[in-house]
Length: 422
Image (cartoon, rainbow, N blue to C red):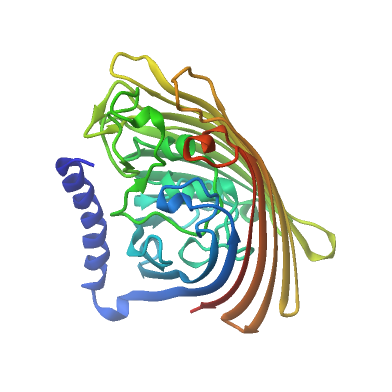
């Protein structure tokens, strides 16, 4: 991110924080304040290779071997004033011995109107935000209540699919029509996401519980094409996921149907509308487009069913428009979860791939894999949970040969966590 980009980006975030602070300048009794958070400490063991967080090709956020970590220290501060206006600031911290850090992950203001007599409601958000995609990360500070590690789809969102944007949702609430069905349509316009797709190309899909912090950049695995005589020699060693290079506005639309007390179905399309002819300070612009569908449903015996699927493409060219990285990708998961008394058991299976369509030498982005996650959670007290989890990923990635690793790998991870929500 250039100096000017950082200045603009910080000004936008500062405007959100200033708006947030201005609410507090009102009479204290007129403003509702709410602080919530999560403290997640873990002991784990990974049978893997060097993590993608350290520039390797390991699929987990932990390196090979044992680990004790503060896997998430999340804090959310919300204010509400009047019937419609609110703001939210979310910070996350990590001490994992690989990439320790503390910083902002979300900062936004929100206007949510009172429904009309016919049940129409307007909901508008502006700031640093996630696109409205995840059905999994619905707990405090974007944590998942089901598993310690996110699905590959939501791990990618956490790593490099966030932006400064304006999100507008129009809802039709069924209870005003004596109906159990709600409908909504969301349109989002955004910037500061021009490198989205880079990490998916160069280390592939991952499973993590780490969200990229506002000030962070992401290390890229060293490959021959990035050597001084390679086609990617101009690429910086780290990718900046929050940079704005082409001054163009991207778009995301989502339609959602909810059957009250039963479930919901959604579908959307994302296009960052990037100009791939631009490269600045080693940061290339990536054109990333994808469609996504998802469903969340309550099955018999209190079993919850959640599934999401994403399919799209990402393109990076040189300044003459010649494709350098041209990939198609997909990922999908199915998760079932059952909660009873103080217990919850969750099972998630996934399939993912990246298909390399270009002919750039020494930069093979092809990948194919499947994964399984089994999680058990026990509630010690109302806000305190002990969780055990097992993850296994079986994947094929030809680029592993660049760092003298087997192309095919089975990576496993065992974790025990203490998570305290407040």
